[in-house]
Length: 129
Image 1 (spheres, rainbow, N blue to C red):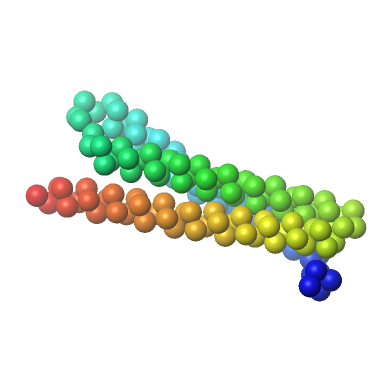
Image 2 (image 1 turned 180 degrees about the horizontal axis):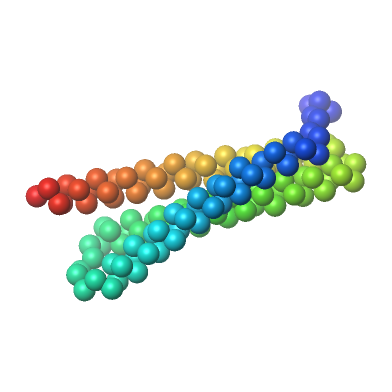
């Protein structure tokens, strides 16, 4: 099975712009969430326990998204090094692992977006009362 894997040096390089943009988007989500948390702490209004739980959950997921994205990026670089020095089969496996980490990161992103939308829906329901 591994004998049929052929990844050239340029294949993992194609992921560099995509992963970089994803990491930028994840960082922006983190900064937005951090700003929201700071705003909530500066407002002298009480914050509901469910809201705090939701924010904590989102922070953890965003951290995991960033970790998986950075790990995917690092494995792409490592894959290119392996291919460059002639270890094509190992490089192909490492590239596959990089793709799996990228997929995991994207799945986490969808989960975080759903949690965020659920929180906004609850907030809108409270405003409409």
